[in-house]
Amino acid sequence: MDIERRMELIKRPPTEEIITEEDLRSLLQTKQKPMAYDGFETSGLMHIGSSVLRAIKINDLLEAKVDFTLWIADWFAYINNKMKGDMELIKKTGEYFIEGWKACGVPVEKVRILRTSDAVKDPDYWKGVIDVAKATTLQRTLRASPIMGRQEADMKYTSQLFYPMMQTWDPFYFNADILQLGMDQRHATILSREVAPKLGRPVPVCVHHHLLAGLQGSTGRMGQETATLMDEKMSKSKPQTAIFIHDSKEEIEDKIKKAYCPERSAEGNPILEMWKYIILRNFKSRTIERPAKFGGNLDIYSYENLESMYSEGKLHPMDLKKETINAMDEILSPVRKHFETGKAKKLYETVKTAHITR
Image (cartoon, helix red, strand yellow):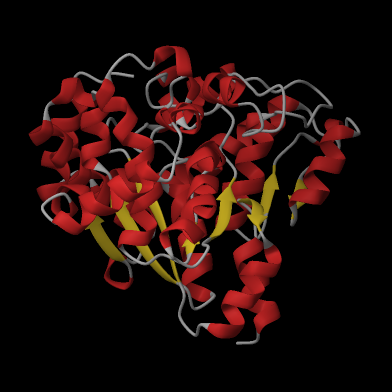
C-alpha cells in the first residue's frame, strides 16, 4: 500500500486534525509498522462515540498498516473518583469495555490491550511520570486538567496532578508513535509533543478524532473550547445526551425524536453527525422513505449530498430522524445481542447497576 493511501485512511472522518501531517508522512516513510494508541477511563456504560465510532477509526488505522494499542486507563478512573473510587468495579468496567469494542467491530485479536493497573507495578513507569513532572511547570499541568473532564477550578486534590503527568508519559512508556485520541485530550497530547525532546524521545504525531455532539446539539466546532466541549459532547454521565450501545429501538426512537435537529441547519446537528461519522461509514447507502406527495424516497450515497439536500430544505427533519432510528437500530442490534449471554451479560449487569459518578 502506498503512502498516499495510508494517509487517506488515517485522515478519514472521524479524524478532525493531525499535528502534523508532515510528521505523519515522515513517520510512514521511515517506519513500516508505526503504533497508535487511545486510552479510556473505564467508567459507566458505553455510548456510540466510545464504541462504534472508535471501532470505525481503529479499523481505518489497521487497514493503513498501523498497529493499535487500547489503553485501559483504570488508575485514571480511580484518580478521577469514577465509580466512587471502587477499583475492583473499575477493573470490571474495563473488561466490559473490551466486550463492547469487540461487539462493535474492533478485531481485538489484532490490537494490543494494556492496563494502567499492570503498568503501575513497574518502577520504570513511575520514573517516567516523575521525569515528565520534572520537565513540566505546575501552571502547565493545571492547564492540562480539562483532559479529566474538569476545569482548573475543580482541581482540589493533589492526586489530580498525577493524571496529566501519567497521560503525558503513557505513550512513551509503550512506545506509541501516534496519539489517536479525542479532541478533548489535546492538552495532554500536545504536552507529550512538548516534553519529548526533554526526555530524549521521538516527538509523537497527534491524530485527534471528532467527538460526537450530544443529542442536545453543539454550538461550535467540538474541541476548540474545552468548557463548551464538556457541556456539548455526547456523555455517559449525561444519559439524555447519548445513545448507548444497549439502547432498545424504542429508546433510540424516543431520544432521536427529542434530539436537536433544526430545519435547514447542519451546524452542530447531532442527527447529521450520526450520518457523517457512523451511518454512512457502516452502510454504502441508505434510502430515506417519504410519501410521494413530499417528493418520494431519497437514496443517500454520500454525506455531502445529504447535508446539501438538508440545508436546502429538500429533506424534512422528521424524515431524516425516522431513517436515523432505523439505521442506528440496525447497527446496535448485534451489539445488544452480544450482551445477552455469557461473560458479556454478567459484565453489563455489573456496570449497569453501579453508581456512575462524573
